[in-house]
Length: 544
Image (cartoon, rainbow, N blue to C red):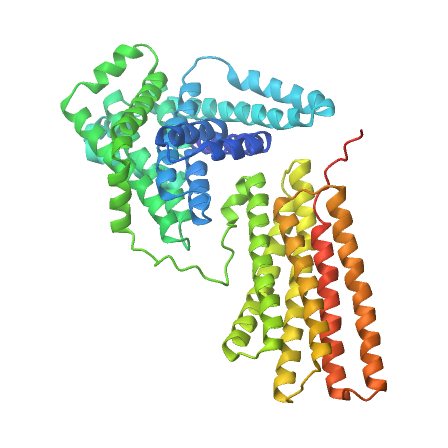
């Protein structure tokens, strides 16, 4: 085999992988919202979960990408381990679509390249989604060019005796499994690995029996991306990766034994007598469907085995960590946006708790509660930094108009929530000074502050409630704005009351300093509460 053939083989592989990449990206952009709906369909019904995994993988043409996505979903609580098992099994079936397409003898390279050119050049002007499908078609065209290039580069190997003997020796089942595992572990793409195997078979360079054992090993190697992806995740996510590995190991072991002692190769030859590439594709389909049918009823056993192999992390959740968002979710922008929405809600809950706690401390000091508020403030600062950085990444992705507006509003809401946290700490510090200096307020001043704090609390809770619901009408907007106006008016009135008390020497300068400090922080929290409420997309008013 000459250097030119080696370069052609590597170039063809590069084109194949590049075509897979841009095709998958195009499909993710075109089907982002559909992926959300498919995910929502996944319930504890395992058959639906299998169908969901199969559909998503058939769309993005990569079981590795799907399983990495599933690991991210489990890690952030979008899917339970039970739900993930069915999705993973379905992903293995969905990945067979690529091998079936590669086995059909049509000039797909020219067809898809021309279709991609039409869609990206002309269709995108009127229909933006057409450019995404054009990218998919271009990716498919490049993929087939890569496949043809690899096949042409391998053709001279038929005349090389050393290579022919090496291929014949792969009739050793376990050697074949190890070779397949190694190839896919290196390429980290089962579709590319199976494509290479189909190219070899198509040129008559490897017998079907030997190719079967390599194919079984490739299924084990396809677990490498999800095993890498589970680094640093929760025990549930690691268990999802372990289920994927167990599924493929058990399936490969079973089919290796079947191929050793039963005429599986003769069955495949009967199904596709004159198409070596289709023989590999049929073997791939039979392997994944049969393994799923066999192991799906045993999903509970796989789950328990994975739980034994991967120790429980105790269910503890680190505060200084994004709990709902995972960078793996950047592959599915609509879901990434929604998960950051949940992170901001979490941040809001912490800020609400800090506000309520700081106001309570002003009434009655408690060292433990004060320490908890200070710890929570550190968490809020961390979340503000991490969520903002993640929003910047998501904002640069392909989002629909609704998610674009959501991400834009989250930038402002995160800042408002963080400021609520800061003002709550200021209230805590005022409460601490009140305790340390043994400052006492008159019954009237105390009642005024309690009333003001309750109004602000109601406004803040309403703001967060509206933010969670992401919907409000004109009447609610008016109520929010009216409440904020009342808070502003009350602030001015209480300041005047304080001035009157000072004039009448009914309070000291120290009392006044703490009182005004508390009043100012309460009023500013009310401002931020209004900002949070009005960040929500408004419902169109109905004209009657």
